[in-house]
Image 1: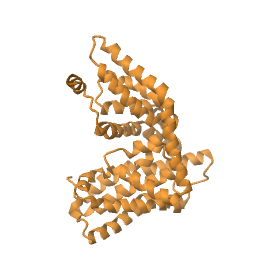
Image 2: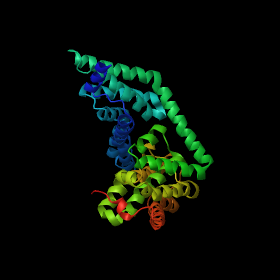
Image 3: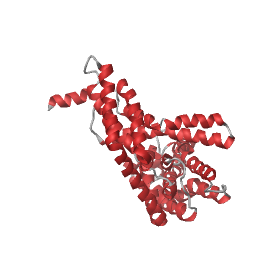
Image 4: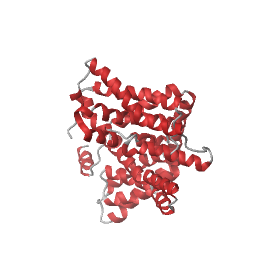
Length: 353
């Protein structure tokens, strides 16, 4: 048993929730961002400004989302080069066969293929043949056997959430907004979760509202102690910066969670805000303005498809209200109440920046 443990340690194979559910998932979201999401943004810019070259480049980027996600996962798992490069084929296979739930299929298959490839890496003199063979064979076989089922299951769960949100926009607006917002601030990837579930439509709009409430909310309520650097870092970067403070004083999280709970149903019931762009955008919030850009991309797609005639003033007002105005005002209100109740002080939100 000790020999096996030593072997796993030598291969840097660590069976832990942190490595598989935080590091690998976060890396997968980055791979998805660098391919599908960036490709969609470039394609949308090309369509709006009639620049065919941008549309073409965007198409190139979007087409490699499977390999990009798999390679990112391999990098997070510290895969050797031959394993990492072989994962490109694995990612393509899993994403192609996984359908709408392709990101989840890529995640599961790439993790297993990467770890198997690491087991045989540099164990023989024919490493340049053995390692790619094992990685690609295991990844491809798993893709053929399980990727369609994984993709279908993920897509079905996402569809069920979207169906429930359409049926009960008030209740599900609260649930989806709060949960995805919490996932955004926790050291896991809300973007990867939304992508894996293909969370779009009205549920995607609620997710955007929840994420924006966390990012904009923490940015404004901590402005007094963190200044402009904190405002930009949290508002356009990530609310995850506050995790240290949340662990020490959980009450500081209450205002943004309450803001999510209010802004979510406002997004679904009042404005009917939908995410018809890439599902990964649903879990990005105001990070690089990806959430609002995703909503806008969906509008453009709907106009092109003939399901939407034009972008109205109320569309723009609803988007700005849900992603910026409401998160700021609601969080400041709830923050004032919490501080009056003595739950925490401004200094409890101080960042080391």
